[in-house]
Length: 216
Image 1 (tube, rainbow, N blue to C red):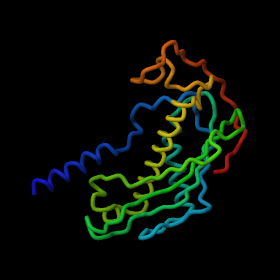
Image 2 (image 1 turned 90 degrees about the vertical axis):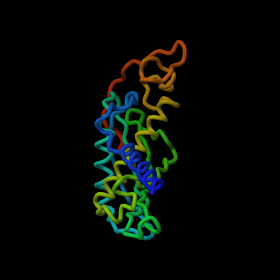
Image 3 (image 1 turned 135 degrees about the horizontal axis):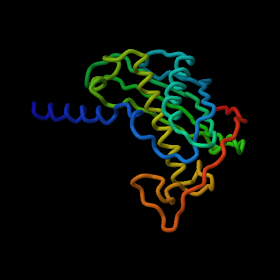
Image 4 (image 1 turned 45 degrees about the horizontal axis):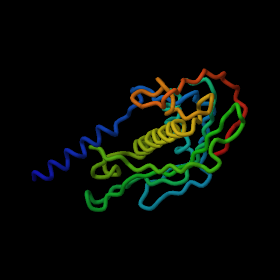
């Protein structure tokens, strides 16, 4: 019994860690400002033991999640996101703690630099989202959540992973820096991160008009 309560406590802590964080400080991401937010699903595949969802439903859910998260960045240059939803599992009710399936989502992401008129990643970036453990999903979300809630949660988690990936690309390769230098080398830009000696902050760039509509 003691072990069971300890296990439940762990899951409750995990649930707190996985809560929505859109009200927190927006992470630094250089000059990034969301331009076109294009979500498609031409190859959408439903996984085994899954509820059904249409392409239109996934496009709507992902578009909203990306807008909510990436629209917070107020940089001075436009970057477009092309997202292709490839596959999903929306868990159905199962046997608790034995055969209770978990929800999942797979998608590809491409980033376009509007001013340069080119892709920043030639090969689409693969994002795999697994259902986060929480008080509502410890027994499987199929038992406690409807399809719309499952889709919204997966889409929000996917948008968070996309933001994390873009942040890493800017830190390491300067994707959204005006001078193209990695952001993690600069002084006073990223709270709590060390900067290289002698590094300087970039000058602001001028926003460009939308020129390229990306395909995912």
